Image 1: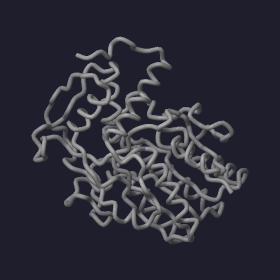
Image 2: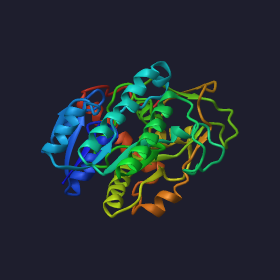
Image 3: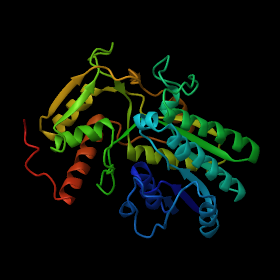
Image 4: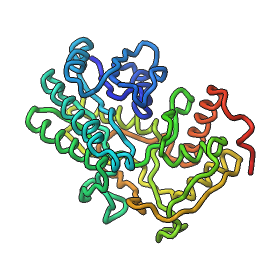
Length: 337
């Protein structure tokens, strides 16, 4: 029996495919390669280049490869982009999920794992944030994922499907062995930007807001290592295969690090200084976003291996240096300032 991974050539998806392949699972991938890379897939994993919302393609792949479970990553993920292009985000996230679910129902798929986001909470009333917190997204991205969650719940109720929706907090880092990582141009992740600055690819890093009522005045985020996140999906798959009921779970560590702490960790690990420019608060930024992970830890057989900011930053930096070497890029520009 095979697991279909949509968006399996992307940042998180490629780590998922590696984890499944290493566990001896049969895996097949659908990815349109808009932000993914076919080279990130392990040898022997079939890749169908196309849209996860193409029902004919999905049905054909399910039948051809005897797919029994779907893990759905494909979608658009940049919050500011969603403000500029809401219809694009509703198409790529909500409509794609609707079509994928329709194909899954037609083919009798009864296990579905969905890549959701803490953005569904908006600006939370309490921290750490439990899954029972009100969902009040502040962006089309957050709404597109929340709509997908609602659809998934309704489809599961109507058709006997079981699902796990994982609400990611801040995903970061790279495969500890350096096989895959975040390689998309123009990435907006804080740690990615910091390691680009540490390797001389950016002149500076901007910090938006240093006057928040937090210990150092900057925003606080709950980072989760991408490899631990992949293992959480494996645990969710085992949970569903074991007869577990549908569940919506936060996916973080339950520990927050500030923007300034994160930058300092990268500076320390890289042994290099880089310029930081302080700017006014950015509209829509949330001050503190940390997961209450008690439900996930009680539901899934999952123990994180890399829940330490220095470890996450070390793996992110090693990956960035590898990318730079492979591009034959900047060699001397990352000297200490």
